[in-house]
Image 1 (tube, helix red, strand yellow):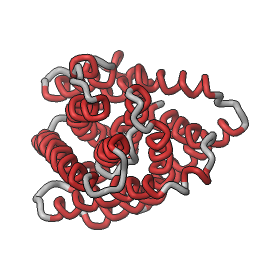
Image 2 (image 1 turned 120 degrees about the vertical axis):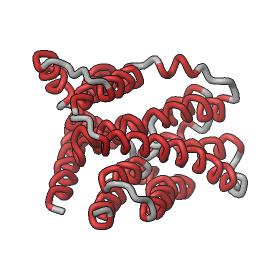
Image 3 (image 1 turned 90 degrees about the vertical axis):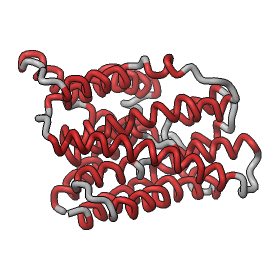
Length: 305
């Protein structure tokens, strides 16, 4: 429990620092965008590749396969459940589409990768990489098609630094080849910046949003409840009955307990599908995760032992 508390406190301090630096305008809007691009195009991919040096064991290989199967099952079931739920809500057509994508598609990369790495090291990051592959498959096919009404070009979205580095990491991991230390060391050093920079960016993104408007939207609360508690709660119950090792179980549950993905906002802006509601919901779920994620982390640490 002390190790879990240590990680939660560190993350809270990093997020608070980013919030403070944005408030005093050291992190400007332009700098925040630059840091985000740097994180997604270089630092995070290096962190993913660095995780491939983890010693391959039969247990971890089995864990990767289990996470892949669990993630595909999660997205398939969640899409069906949320589509049925949205049909019963008094929302307009566009808001129903956002409801589905917001509840189903979480922030697997920006929040999930550094969190799993902080909690479980390279093993956790590798497992998160596999989960994220399923996210890409469903988000850039079903998700884009739902929000746009158009057929998505899946190839375009898979050819990005995170997807490419994920494939490279998995290929290195399953092969007998390992990067030489002279190359692996600087890659690991760059990748080590992932956690502090990503958490500071999250804090900075919360600073400009008026708290009152975020906390007054009932529709956003419904989405946050489903995204942060209901769906991960169902996944937690499912994991109780499966003979899987504790780390794999925890990663599966916690990856399903992440806040709404920022990609939802980008696509809602692009396709004019309730972008303001989408932005509000993402920020609200980010705020509420500071309560729900430590709760889920504690629950996993106590039960999956």
